[in-house]
Image (cartoon, rainbow, N blue to C red; front, side, top):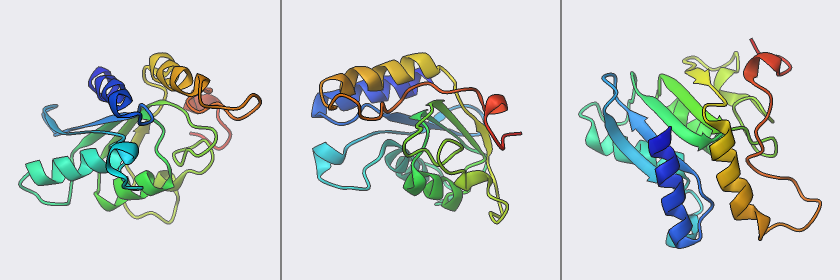
Length: 165
């Protein structure tokens, strides 16, 4: 997760929301990295997870099927990124801060653990939630109007969440 945090910090250089992601293969080696790049590229799909998954798919010999991999990301994935995790057949998803506004892995929706999904990844949330959330809160401190939702606020662990477990 510390590598993902480094990617998130690098996103600040382009004015992007500081979210970073890393893909590990079965042995724990890094096969893909990504950071938010929507501002840098003008691409609305340039989320950290999408870019890390693309990088991993290009690096690994198994093509788009990323079975056996672990995706680490500093913020709970949105619906688009949760769908990409499912489409890529990622085996494990580890995230830092919960996103109570747009999270799709338990906070607002739980797309990756839906009963209708054929292949569900293992999910571990809240890993290094404090530093992941603090990076986002610091970024948005100057961007948000008073009274708006705080993105990246650490939330309760999965065991305390309704419907978890």
